[in-house]
Amino acid sequence: MPDSSTPAVLLASLKANTAFTPQGETVGNLTLGRGRLNGVEVFVAIVENRIASGSLGVRECDQLASLFRIVAAQKAPLLLYLDSAGARVSEGLPALGAFRHMYRAALAMALSGTQFTVLLGTHCYGGASMLAALASTRVFSANTQLAMSGPSILAQNAGATADDAMFRAIAQAAIGAEGRAKLGQGNSLHWDATARHAPPAWHEHHRQLGERLAAVTTSAMRTEAVQRKDLTALYPRGYRLQEQTGILSGEANDAAGAITLLGVADKKPLGAARAWALADQIWKLGIEKPARLHLLVDCEAHAAALDDERIMLSSYLADAALALATLSKGGTAIETTVLGQLGGGVYVLLAAASAQVNLLHGAVIHLLPSRAIASILGDAQTAPHEIDEYMQARVAERELKVGFLRA
Image 1 (tube, helix red, strand yellow):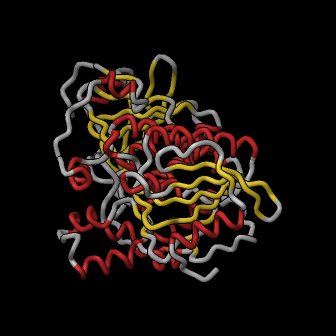
Image 2: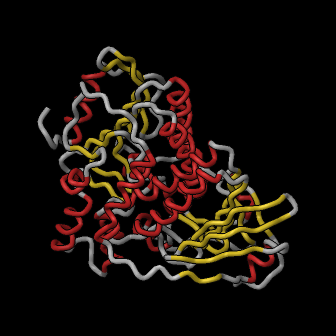
Image 3: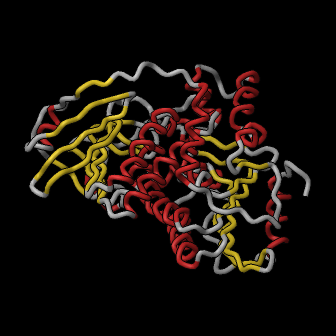
């Protein structure tokens, strides 16, 4: 097969090389099936752009979660064709909750040692790109774009318009197939159906992601003590917290004993550098193996900047999620507490490995920031949600009413 094939050619090649046999009915954009590749039975999942830009709704996510659990248990190879704009915005909170639980199963699969290959169609945005980042190998079509934010959101953030020809060219260089292939680390323009790819060594993968950041200018690493009224109310027995390069770290105590604290709570979007710094802290906790970890967050969304996308922001968010999943697998009980706002890929990376998501009274979890939702649905108005709605959607488990003035 020639390099940089079209999505149609890549999908046809997948079906032909595996003698793909569908199993069950197609659900929305998802078709599941089986096949054989190099004499080995493989699972095959195909996400096509049929409905709402190939987005993943509740039904697709629930089916994928079941598949990922089977793949992890059997350690059988999985090939996923993915042409998706991410979670289905029109389904609101239920889609976010379903994506959370699907991504939890995907993380467990990635850590199980199975061979996971993703073949990419035209679009791979948002949570779909975080899913692709868990694969051993990502094969790009000639016109694939992979990013946390689509071109229109990136244009808005840069003060440009989506139909600006110069911006489109710059964005294509950043998030298009050729730019992604140059990054290496499992990105390819050619699918060699005969090759076997060992799952990444995720600690080494984390180190390599750090090397990508070498060209990013960072400020001096100043450490500051943090005091907040909301945290004093949450941890009346006392806590110690410091902030360095936008990452909170420290410890607290309650009736059950010591708690390790980590988080991002400065309201700024989470970009690649801070995501890597957060992941680095979590990977290091794997040595200490704390009994409990509380993630404290006030971060509306992931960053929507070309500089972050040039080094593939999705990989950095997935790295932090993998670090948390590894910690959870080792026995650490993880909770996320939303102090203000949380949404987008940041919600997914924190909540997927969390046994419990808590909201302070008045805190908000959303699928995407209102500006991003407006660009997709044409309506920036989003009604506030009650805790019962969050719980029913599997987005959060508990509301904390501690009677304090917000920090």
